[in-house]
Image (cartoon, rainbow, N blue to C red; front, side, top):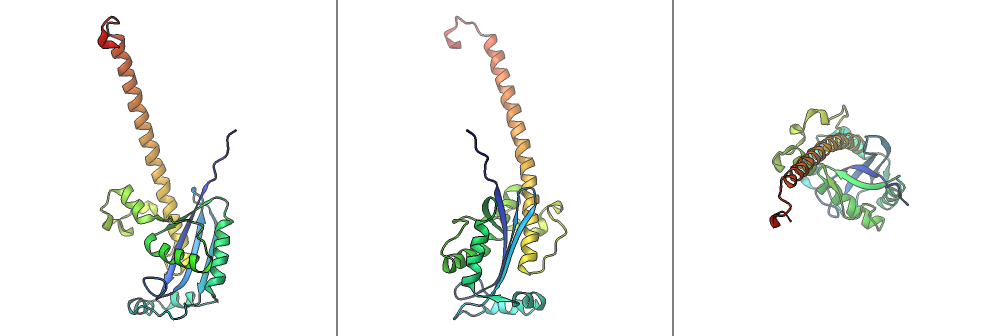
Length: 223
């Protein structure tokens, strides 16, 4: 009896923080945009957080935020306690209609904060230990050196007309659409490779059959 495969849901996530690591510094805001593979945006979640007790902004990040007054104002509205927001978020992820896959760029930054906060305040991470990094996917798809796999070098058709505002929800939606466009290209590449492989296999089989037809059946080397 066959079973229908449970689809993956790609949870594009953006974090805004006041430093490079959680604990000494705080996650100020986060948002996720849940996409199906065919780029349907099926749900979103966002929250602005109270800062951690005893934490302080990193000087470099603090200086950067001073250049972004609109984004700063947006991430300081309607603050929630992390223990409430992260429990609600984990429940939201677990209720999505598929297997959740964490997607970010760079995943090393966003997933570090999200994993730490989920484990600290919700006690579990619905993504397990895994995160899909858009930069790494671009490196594999484009052939660019890893350090040069950056957005300005990505193919233009990967980008939709979404703003990048440093407001977590805006950026999560933009990033998710980018990922889905990349995934569509990847599927085309995979289909083309499968077709070439099948064609080569058929040609090899035909060559083997033709060779066998010309062999002397009494020759032991044919067996």
